[in-house]
Image (cartoon, rainbow, N blue to C red; front, side, top):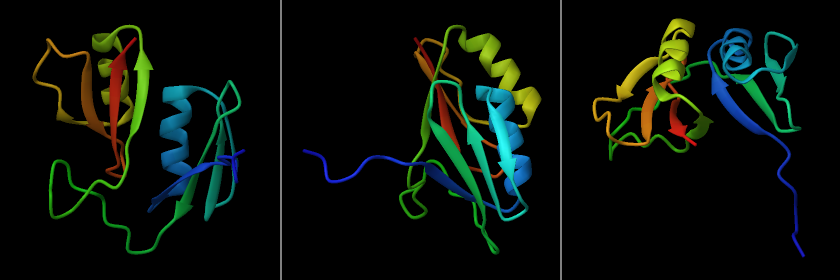
Length: 119
């Protein structure tokens, strides 16, 4: 028997409203909250939250000294189309040069790494 259930994944960031908007465009769903905390209710029941973090420093990828701590793997049907979409939303490429792989690495506008993974 589990001791707990996963409630929400929370990302620290400098601007919760902006980062919640980025992920809402990427994943769908609805955003609610205020300047300090935003909730993104994603279709299917999972939720992401975004918390204001004064002095936020983005993780560096790849870096043994400045670990990324965690990342999101997002499943997509068409890597090229999804890549164009996330770049238009403000993501930046971290590692997408090897087009033979089934995944590519990006950073969201606050610098959190995430992967687009072909299903």
